[in-house]
Image 1 (cartoon, rainbow, N blue to C red):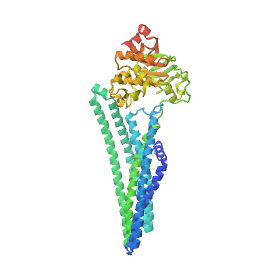
Image 2: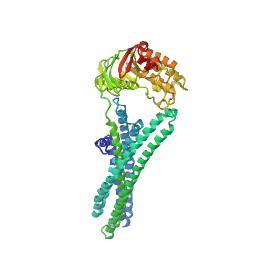
Image 3: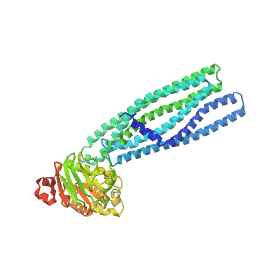
Image 4: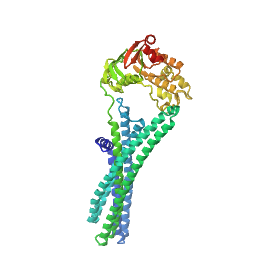
Amino acid sequence: MRTHGPRGRDVLTRAVAGQRRDVTVGALLGAGHQFGEALVPVLIGIVIDQAVAKGDTGALVRWLAVLAVVYVCLSYSFRFGARAGERAAEQAAHLLRVELVQRVLDPRGGVERGRLPGALANIATDDAKRVGAVNMAVMTGTSALTGLLVSAVALLWISVPLGLVVLLGTPVLLWLGHLLSKPLERRSEAEQEQAAYASGVAADLVSGLRVLKGIGAQAAAVERYRRTSRDSLTATLRAARAEAWQGGVVLALTGGFIALVALVGGRLAAGGDITLGQLVSAVGLALFLLGPLEVFAWVNSEFAQGRASAARIAEVLAAEPDVTAGDTPLPGPVRGSLRLRGVSLGALRGLDLTVEPAQLLGVATTDPAAAEDLLRCLGRTDDPDEGTVELDGVPLPELDLAGLRTALLVTAHDAALFEGTLADNVGPGDDARPAMAAAGADEVARALPLGADTGIGESGRFLSGGQRQRVVLARALHAGRPVLVVHDPTTAVDTVTEARIAAGIRAFRHGRTTVLVTNSPTLLAVTDRVVLLDGGRVTADGPHSDLVRDEAAYRTAVLA
């Protein structure tokens, strides 16, 4: 995607327009600061001509007092203008982060497709900060422009040739600076892409560290990250070289321009066309111009990096959702009836399935992919290619998605835990105890130093696999949804604990629709009814004991 495309420009425009007040205030104060800075050389020239050259002590005191007032004003203007600019930059970055998080958490999904979680985190931090910094660049650039205009007017007042040199030379320098920023823009985008990917790989490796150690794959993982980090470093060095090259060339051009201004002023003074004080003012203004022109080089650099980051943010914000959201409110109260009619998605082939309200249904599969695809349909992370899924007779795509999430909860086998305590992950207060007991998470709490108030680390890394599963199940039960779909909640626990959990689920979910997608005979034995998915369709339906006795394919799936 081109970094200067319309979506990137839209993000930049929104970031600046959203902080218009602070940017405007900062620009006005910055302009006041630059006006004062440009006025200082002019006042020094006046002091030389009106007081020093004439030996007038009174005039010297008066003009020095004026100079002191100007210094005080420009100092305060800089202080409060910089504060307004920083506030605008940080506020814009914050609002962009909020937008990005809202899009990532949008129940319609679509953002994470093709992106590692670490890459999204990088976009929400580094890229948002770079786009926010454009506000400071706008404010600073406006201030620098004011300094240039004041200097040009002052030089025109001193001498028309000097003023024309500044007025004609400045646009040329700005245009050259813009051209020189193009390579930096391209390399900045590549740098951010590689940095985001490296962050994603690092987060991926850290989350799977225990598994990597278990299979002895640490060396391969380290080598993978080393290659990724090396690519990121190469991209960063290229961007740094482009920035250094741009800054060096612009500085050289600026120095040549200042030398030209000083040369013209010196020749005019030598010819008697301007006074000594005016020459001092002209040289002082020429030296002062170095600052605003360097600022323009920095502004070009910030805009180049901001455009690259804005394009990446725009790509996330404009990501096509995986599913569409309806506007039909939930039927109330939710009875919990589920019906799948002719559903085809992935491994599912024309699946027909009905779950009655308050039923505890077991779903066994001969193909694990069929279980995953069933969860995708029920959780609406994807819609079926064919067929419909209904809740209480209403197709899921017609329901308000946020409302649907309050009625139907799908807990995947690899559901994540969060940084914090065990209680934070399940739910605070005594009302979480029944859910923890049903899931066997009460035993986990008793085994921890501070009980349920013990921190479990990022993604629950301080817990074993079986402990994490029980906490995830407790969280799902505690949510109390009218319809709950759980996938393989006990694969990492022992048989005694699994039997206790099976009984706990049945008792806790009594009177509410529950679907257990699992091949565990212990869990399937407590269900009201079990269906077997084979070839993407229901090929057997009945109590667990009957299917074990009568269906060879079922016995193979759950007992092998």
